[in-house]
Amino acid sequence: MSLDVEAVRKDFPIMAREVHGVPLVYLDSANSAQKPQQVIDAEADLYANHYANVARAVHTLGSEVTNAYEGARDKVAAFLNAPSRDEIIFTRNITEALNLLAYSFSNASTFPGGEKFALGPGDEIVVTEMEHHSNLVPWQQLALRTGATFRWIPIGDDGRLVESAIDEVINERTKVVSFVYQSNALGTINPVKRIVERAHAVGALAIVDAAQAAPHIALDVQDLGADFVAFTGHKVYGPTGVGVLWGRYDLLAALPPFLGGGEMIETVAMEGSTFAAPPHRFEAGTPMIAQAVALGAAIDWLTDLGLDNVREHGEQITGYALEQLQTVPGLTIIGPADNVDRGATISFTLDGVHPHDVAQLLDEYGIAVRAGHHCARPVCLRFGIPATTRASFGVYTTTDEIDQLVVGLSKVAEMFST
Figure (cartoon, rainbow, N blue to C red):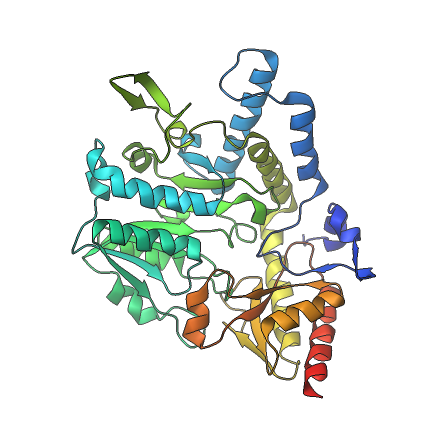
């Protein structure tokens, strides 16, 4: 069974929009995916009919909202094939999830059982050269706080990690390896199991940024073998303001809290406090209640489509786009030029035209793409370019929209050649 894209598009109210008098062509899903009506309705229904604070009231609304919030945790656990719902932590986004880990690691040595996370001079933290800033800056800061050395696996000319560098950079001094599953700037899908196995072989923790993978690839944390995996709600057709951190329970239980406040405590006295067990230890204060419930609705909706169907559609639309884009004069794809181990994101440059000008002119044709360094500036530095234009696809993307993109780019190229 393949994905019925036209039926899928009917779930998205925004697909009926016009921009500058022409139908919208939304090719910016790697930035943020659009929302189906089912997700919009789930969030609105909670506010309209069931809203109260969670885990704080015994009245009917309090019970309803707590059940809905914790029910969303169950849905995320199933989505990730997590061994336990208690391994699912709700955060504001993946950026907060990764910062939670980096901050907690730096405080872990003073926490019972936290010695395994302690870093210091002589230890090394490893990322890749293709990381989003959210999986780069927190680890740079952790290295500065602890005196650990910050290292990275380089990118080859083909937009993939240098294979030989994986074993070289990840060595017996490595304590943390945090890397992206699928690059938001290049579309590259990295060899997750290979990197995880190498990290574990030297006794390091393995952390996976799955923000770009989650909308397209079925995530099975038990199969991946990593210690922590994170993703964000708004890229899986859910709302903004909610993300997910999954971690092995034994590791979460040994980590100190990220934030202090209500709900994350066990007991509080003026002389000191003790903390709740995971996941609530890491969810201080009133959480993102409606957003978590709507994320659960998004997961239901995406799962109902069939994750195999979703992946197949992504592969097909990306293969078609790669072929068609290479017919545009002066266009250079930055990243893998073939459709092997790459996701539904394509970055490119156009000779003689700044990427921001490309994006602005395409917008006049109703085509929404992103331009810039995509919060992955080291990628642009690696390829010696100031920025790229990026087209990224979702379950609602059609071949007709790819054709419109190619026509629009050809017009832009022609405009600047005269």
